Length: 505
Ligand SMILES: Cc1cc2nc3c(=O)[nH]c(=O)nc-3n(C[C@H](O)[C@H](O)[C@H](O)COP(=O)(O)OP(=O)(O)OC[C@H]3O[C@@H](n4cnc5c(N)ncnc54)[C@H](O)[C@@H]3O)c2cc1C
Image (cartoon, rainbow, N blue to C red; front, side, top):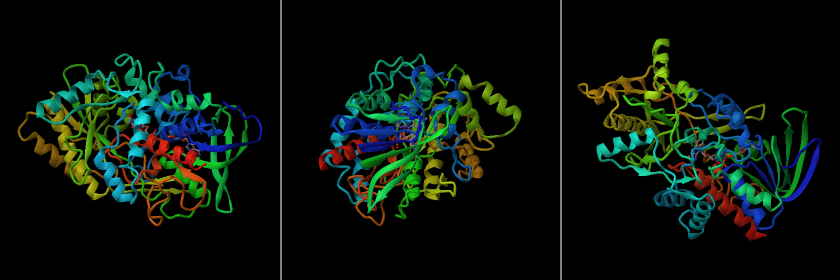
């Protein structure tokens, strides 16, 4: 860690902005290849001692904008990590590979031949190895047992989630991992790739907000940032480099590109968010939906409703604040009742693979603004999947089911025509414009990779079409949404981009 206590200038081969899934991998790969690397991270370096697991504390210290970032219309909160290790520190450890079919679809869509290539397969394999991805620590907590029970009863697909953990204590505190794993079992980039990078001499600066890329005669030659030490005054940090890699996540990477004067109209334009909603079930047994393995089962029963688009069923740890913020409003009495019985609630999460896009713009203050509303095409899939999620919970034994609409749709499975009543009531409330709660855990495709420079921002190497030696290596580069939880795919793209930089040098 480099302490910056005055205006400072550094030099290196590669400066990397952001230390999450993308930035962490690029740092590890290039540093181990002998390159001199500087990593600039806007968030703090949180050690396990700082991880109190208290929702309010951890949201404000480890999440982007304290967990309060919203789409412009207020229809969707956007959750992302912001600390050394980025999203990999606070994510749910689900380590699904990009499916073969999506890889082929991405090649067709982008006009590249990367995603189905052996080179990309090797990147995926390398990442899986470094992260120790496997199914050894996947004992299901109660929420995942109920998901599995419901799917089995219906004869539907359900499978075990691969995870990037080592010696995970599973049941004990694993449900709190979304606020950092204080036992060090999660193989986040700060415990893997950034460690490799540090061992190879990489310098890292935290609390460093990068404002813009320095460009000279069409080439990137460095970045300028401001270091905000938690106590002291801000200092200017200038880093000169042979190459600049942006990995600030799919909300901030396009904002940096725009602030740096790039004018490609595709920057920020094809943003996907994988909007996630859920159906809640009330169970006679104690579920404690905040506990147990953080995520260990999923179902692809509705994942391919049309052309590879649809929704995955997954559970997620429902702690008090997250649940309370997502529950729809009916009355104070009902809200209190739902929150008070949280320990008997479970959920079937609906994770949408969105086909249609929103965009990231930049306000006059230079900060990103996220514009996103669900299209009618994507709403049709939410609608079908919501009905499926209700069936899963009913088959698992829920006595009452409710949605995250305002006001919620409430039904009792077993009563006459309950499913039709559920679907009709959900339709009448609607699915867009704040009618139902969603959360965007996965941001991607806001600086897309593609062969056509009129439709994308970066080429196959990750280098921008507009400025030489300026690369994008994070979720922004996805050609479309992945449909699977994106960490492993982001890391594979970052591995590919980093190796390319090294090979060309
Ligand atoms: C609660 C939660 C659970 C999730 N669970 C899973 C899961 O189980 N499996 C999965 O595959 N995915 C999961 N995800 C998503 C996954 O973690 C992200 O998609 C992934 O981390 C994104 O990688 P990235 O490199 O694009 O950006 P990030 O990992 O978000 O890293 C970007 C970093 O850049 C920094 N930054 C931003 N702007 C600047 C700037 N101007 N200057 C300097 N630094 C900057 C940020 O602080 C951040 O640390 C989850 C996400 C959340 C929020």
